Amino acid sequence: MSGKPEGNLAGTALKEEDMKDKNLLKEEWNEPGLSYTWSTGVAIGTYLEGLKKGKLLGVRCRSCNRIMVPPRLFCEECFKTIDEFVPVQDTGKINTFAICYIRTDASRQKRPQIPAVVELDGASKGMGILHLLGEVKPADVKIGMKVKAVWKPARERKGDITDIRYFKPWEPEPKPAGKATAKAAAAKPKAASAEPKPKSGPKPKGKGA
Ligand SMILES: [Zn+2]
Image (cartoon, rainbow, N blue to C red; front, side, top):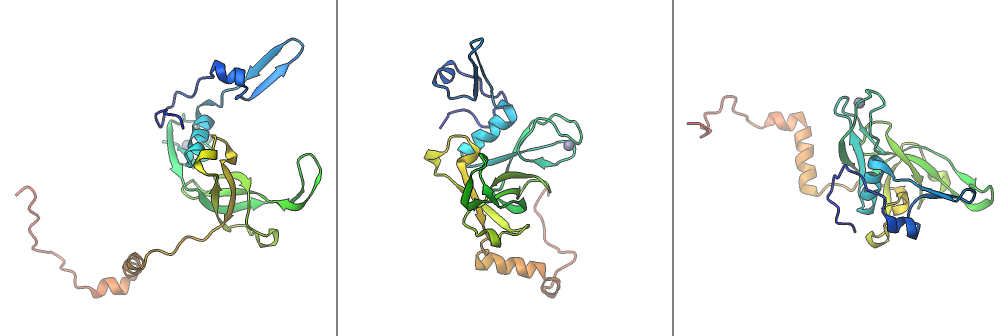
């Protein structure tokens, strides 16, 4: 766990020791002998730091108010610079999916992988991330199905999209009985109107007297 302050927009500088230990995304050329590394940058770097902490982060455009995920540094609709990171939920719904019996190297696999675009709760409509589905039979996957991230334990996370193992089918837990009843009562206009409400209450407010 790094002791870096949260919401640091300065990004993460590349370190000499990480270059030596090859902890960075690296490309090496033999002729001439050159090596290149990349910083993940502010937007994706902050996103990856969030994953290490078990959080999914998006960004909010102060102009159109859209919450976008994965984070980016400008809004492609208003061309405004973005500087606000906001947490989104690790739950969402399936926007689209595929059932893959072939790996990226074209070899066959018996148990298919199910990549899916998951629209995350708390992000704007249509905003989602590509990940894998798990704990579900291919035939049972439906567009619009609710899913939740299955995270690796904190000690195994390293700031990688694979810090989430996969998304699994999920239903929101029913609210505790007391709250649910109160909400249901509030939602019923009949119940609300049955309560006698003084229109101009003589209650002294006590403020500014
Ligand atoms: Zn915008």
